[in-house]
Amino acid sequence: MAGRASASSRRLRARERRPVARKMVCILSFSTIVQDARVLRQIEYLSSHYDITVVGHGPAPAGVKYIEVPAFTTVSKLLAVVWLLLGKLAPRAYEAWYWSTRRHRAAYQAMMATKPDAIHANDWNALPVAVRVAEKTGARVVFDAHEYAPLQFGNRRLRVFLYTPAIRYMLGKYTRRADAAMTVCAPIAERYRDEFGLSMMVVMNAPALSGEKPQERKINPEQIRLIHHGGALRDRNLGLMIEAIAQAGKRFHLDFMLLPTDPAYLDELKRLAEERAPGRVAFVDPVPPAQIVQTLQKYDIGFGVIDATNYNYLMALPNKLFDFVAAGLAVVTGPSPAMVALIEEYDFGVASPTFDPRDIAGTLNSLTVERIAEMQKAAREAAKVLNADTEMAKVVDLYARLLGEVY
Image (spheres, helix red, strand yellow):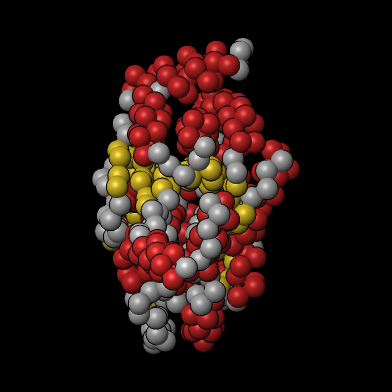
């Protein structure tokens, strides 16, 4: 008996010493990964618990296995027009178009090679690949909608005409095969529920807590510094903020920190700034996502006006809003419902009643130094809740449930 007990104890100790294989999560996003803050947070927080393989575009993100897939070519874009027109007659052509695209086939092959236990599919265009791989491997699929996909092309009529029916087809077919889904704000989650019967968890685009907490700082009443960062995207009508600064008091100065997404548009904005608000609007070089919050801390106000030129912009709850809060800035926005709701809940900012530059300027002019300081203090408090630790805990918990693990 003693010998059997001793042998049993040895086997138990050997099992305890044996390393437990970590499960594999594949993150798929047809975006430039190193510029995609939401995807970078997925990598950061999930890599603490799983082996991660990332499939996407552009330079490799640090610290994980990365497989780059080819971007769209001019030829593939031209062929897409043919398939998308055919899809209006026979929706099965949408499938043929999707799988005729080189990047989708390359992503499928790359992900099959990783033998994933779960796949995080960022946006609608990643979902068919994720589902097809899951059907072969048994992986769980999480759909992450960064926006309301059927309206992602906004006011670009030709793209709406061509792509929106295809996107609706893909969502209708593939979302029912996802094991879980999430998006960026409640209004978009509600629309997915109403139109596709999809239950979505809300994970807001909040950054990680900074190592250095933002401190109270003195505001110069003669030069109140505003900052807006993001992409130079024509659809966002960024000139609206230049017009507002031109009509606001001379104490307000605005810096744009823009990615050159559309270089021609960026040049137009620079010319407009020189014409309408000379010496009061400047353009500074963009920084990597990990440095944004620290860079913002030298400003007084985050200027987060995103003109409601389409549904997704109207409902936006963007990275920049949470970056402003993390940096301890007061925030000024337009009347975007999701942003207004957070501003009213935490009192870290103020919203213009309309997107008219005169009203935005009037909102700025109404601010006293004391009120700006109060909103900055509220932002510092809000950052204790509105941060990636809080939001990404939802994602980590979701994967633990899907993969049968406990943390």
